[in-house]
Image 1 (cartoon, rainbow, N blue to C red):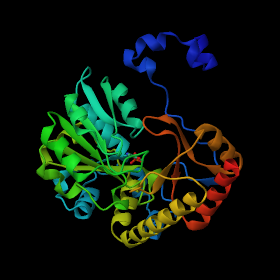
Image 2 (cartoon, protein in one colour; image 1 turned 120 degrees about the vertical axis):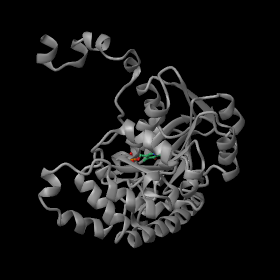
Image 3 (cartoon, rainbow, N blue to C red; image 1 turned 90 degrees about the horizontal axis):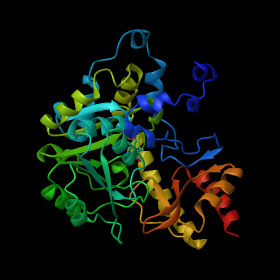
Image 4 (cartoon, protein in one colour; image 1 turned 90 degrees about the vertical axis):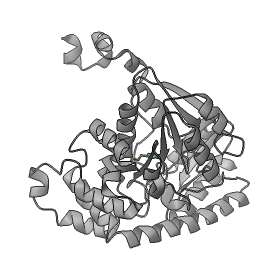
Length: 360
Ligand SMILES: *Cc1c(COP(=O)(O)O)cnc(C)c1O
């Protein structure tokens, strides 16, 4: 009772015994998210949202709020299928691609099995591994930042997670390496293409032809809808059906579905133009870094990873100057680095100025 009244988590030791044992080691996902004038820390669309989405949200009627949304987002699946070049039954949606990843991991593994992934990669994957009772098997990227295919396959993991372009390195895996993983894997392969719009190569359209491949995507990055939480996966219809069971009904809310439909139709031209702008600004930013004696890993995404001396100290100093970047201390093979999202050029100039102040 005391614990409940005081609201203190640590005052209720029973909670730890009541919860799954594996949950003892899980902490809440907590990157520094205090508001900052210029926030280039989370790879979202720094140009805003497609105007078509703003219009769609402004014209929402009360039925979209008082009624339940569609069970499995059928209209959205249709639009995504057209966008991805697959059939609607080869698409599953979710509350962000995080939800799709978690649902897929749950659908295709049992606690005690293993998930292998390149290291470093998307920070949520080790967390999803624990949430689902899986053994995490990180496999360092090769020196050229491509996948270590032999080491990944040698894990015999139930699930192999790949991310290309990869977060946080921004580097792309080679098509040959991905195909070798697909040919040799004994379990499910998840290929996270959250940043594929900023790269050329993609597997999503071909996903249904591979019996054990699920390709995940999101509307949080290129499409600017991170706050609405819309993600999806494409794959063989039989695989997708299992993910759909695992994720459950009503996961995409009614407003999010309308906004996503607008983004994928009238909003497409806007998003494609912003992607081109990111690619141009990315090259210009990397060039400007070089002029300041810094280099970035080769980027195929809407962000760059910049190796530095002391990532935490630099990020803290930049934050005091009103710029939020994401520090990554002690990455395997890379060491300390800053992850910086690419946005409109004036914003990038502010980032460069604050960064330069820390390098003096
Ligand atoms: C941002 C990100 C996601 C999460 O996307 P949501 O759809 O917003 O959940 C998934 N994978 C990678 C690699 C990401 O960087």
